[in-house]
Image (cartoon, rainbow, N blue to C red; front, side, top):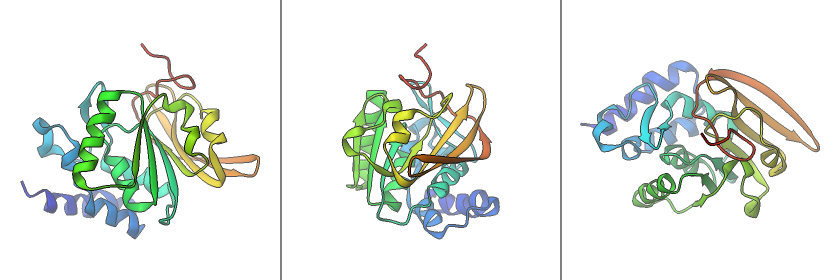
Length: 214
């Protein structure tokens, strides 16, 4: 399959018509080889307009949803970003194209390891992988210019707001396990402002400040 062509079609038909206009974001989506983050048996569907299973009851998000979340971070290029929920590593790679440093936290060690192998193969060198409870963030490298959470949480975990820089932005799906609202929080001194953008459905964020393991 001509994945390069499919990638360009994805940008032109799934992202731009839905209002993704940030040229840096679009360039990142044109660059990152999504098929490398998808299991081999469904690789032909890598650029379809939907989420796909990646094992361990986890998914690689729909390209449009990845683009929306990325756009909301408003990255300029010099930021340090914390990602909660490495998953396949696709969102991680997109972030790596757009900022200076990415710290990505994944609770499931096999997923983290596989994502790291894929990322290393693609040549990214500005990403640090951590296996831990993502709801607690990663205090060692805090504070962060931006934080992105790629799993659903019943409320915004307090450690994440504490690890955000003044003026920083946090993007997170908040709601129940069936549907969430994509929520952007901006930190302004000791005050926080939030707004909700689109309805979404993500797998649950499991951890101390999220959903309990089943």
